[in-house]
Image 1: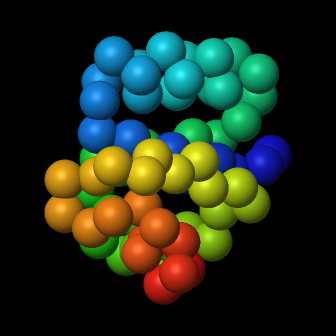
Image 2: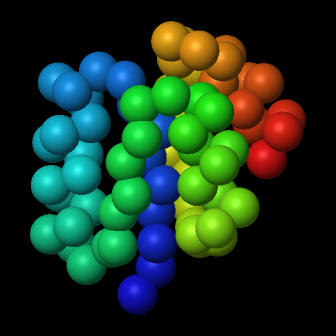
Image 3: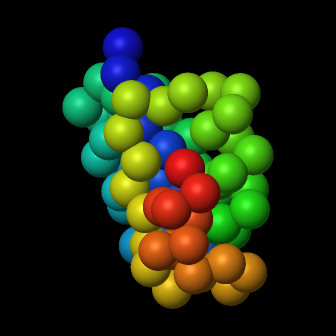
Length: 67
């Protein structure tokens, strides 16, 4: 099963996305902050990262560069 990491701080966006991705058979991890995403990638090694650009702690582009 493919693992998706969703990095999104707006629940109105993240909740439906998580629901649909799981219904399609993906294993989904969801975090709402950039640093949490960086920390999680080190341990979970997702197959795909869906990354919001406007996060509360670190800009999404900076998260992408660190990953």
